[in-house]
Image (cartoon, rainbow, N blue to C red; front, side, top):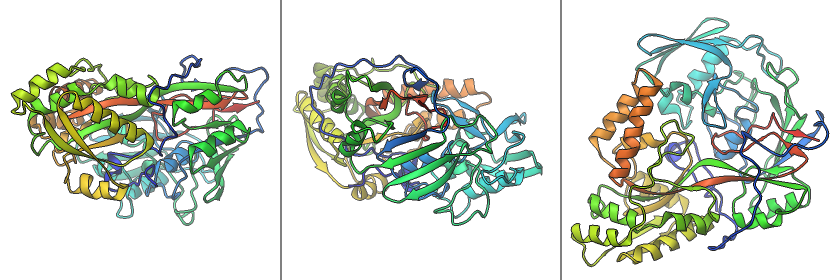
Length: 518
């Protein structure tokens, strides 16, 4: 099964799935000592890191291509972005947009012209100096016919892209966009050397590493770029080893063949590493939101009382405990804490079986109702599906579970909207705006929300954008547009010999340059 893959076309803008989890115990309760919260993981160890060390990273997501504007799956950005290729801006692990290849920028009074001033002394990994024309070519490529980048549509507002001189890039937008600098953090907008070879297998960027080997089906090797313009990588080499299942990956970590893994997929496996001084366990946050979505355009889900009833019949805390043993957090809307417009809305439609029954009676279903839930099965989704079936039954709601494959879900649910309800996880940052699109697969149609989303993008300041999107988040929750369940945690296990790795899974990149190994 390839449910973990995320292509850059079609629904990739909205949804992607993790690999199936390992066996999950519904009552798992693993006693852990988690490291203190920090922007990077790992405990300090005696001895200085070895600058010539090789760091081996385990991952369940091998890239399907090196073409930055084609995407492929989560592994594509995980390996390349910020490590091999860089953009004008970067999304940090705590969800902030900061300068990268652009040292600074000026914005016109009407917000439509961005003048970027490039960092001095930047070269590609082959030693060729970076010029503004190279940035122009990369930005033109992400919106070209060849591109299937997830951000192609967003970045198509770039009306003209020019290089007034070798160190300046001028971009004129067709309309003001408060999210423009965020969109530039995407892999598709990263700068690559033009005409460097077959883009499917060759990529030359300005990052702290050069990609020096790809054994398809096995591993990718990154070697420190000694010509890097910024702070050099703390290790000489990083090897990403790819696994088909989490069990094999965990066994490799236990055997000392890996230094760390990008994400633990089940709390159950942590017992193997707990209490062992050679391993560190770190928990951070992610942007992976588990959703129970309704087709809001069809009966009975076009009735807001029915949607509220389903939300109140859902015990989100119990579902989170069943899947993640209380790690992660319940959600009250589509916004994780690392998005600027986060607000705790979990009190809206909190678990209330009696209230759910009253709402169903008010909606004309005093004897309950029944409907079908389509979903792509994985261990995590199976637990959620069975949990929801049991919980909703207590309020008189009968659901029929209909497991389908990924391709069928894409055609039936995402493209054709031929469904009643579905389970899906959405991992993208700042994806609240999909509720402003009435044609999106859940077909939520609120004209006020659509206007707020539109106005937020055209807002004169980031504060205005944030205020408007907070209104959106609250309104969709008050409308029960979906049943937002919980946010997956980001859990990593690493050898105590390494430190400096990122704690959260809030960006598409798994940034490895700060990792030191002693």
